[in-house]
Image (tube, rainbow, N blue to C red; front, top):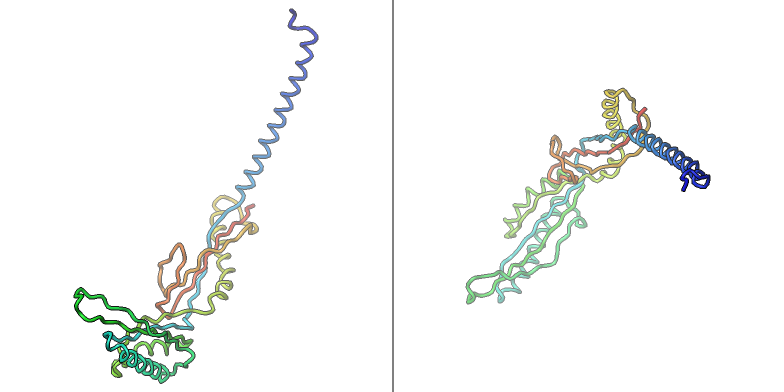
Length: 245
């Protein structure tokens, strides 16, 4: 059989054409991929930050007062708690706290556990107190003066004062442009070393907000909100992607 018969030779040009077409398509795909990769390399992503010192403009303070009573003295204990509540309110209002800024819980009763099963049962009666003020200095002084309640026979336990900055949402927005500007400076420093310049912003995402004691260097990956200090430092971070040229 002649392998070079006209019937068989007819398939060779077709095969060649298919191979040539495949090479052209492959070249186009590679070239296209190269362009995409190259354009992806023409961006830089950096972080930027901005911070500002603020002073707390509101405060929250909590405490509690209690009595320990036996079952037989329960009614007397509740009467004592009522007198203690009146003494606490009188103290707070006497310090200039408006009554609407004072919240006192109902009486909670908890049995005191004892090893001696023959001992009479005793209960701890507790009421919690919450005070909110926009005057942080007054709140600080108030917490210190609460020890005078002992002179009225009140068994009072004072908690720590918590300080807050109410304008935080607005400040976050105010600091954003500065954080982006800081990111651009960092991007320019990096781009210059590679012979490129920073062009337009491609994307911006805001990171966590840090509310720290003034002068601290400690930050958290998940953000933080310090409530223990009056003077604070608010820092916002951004992750910004710039195009290069």
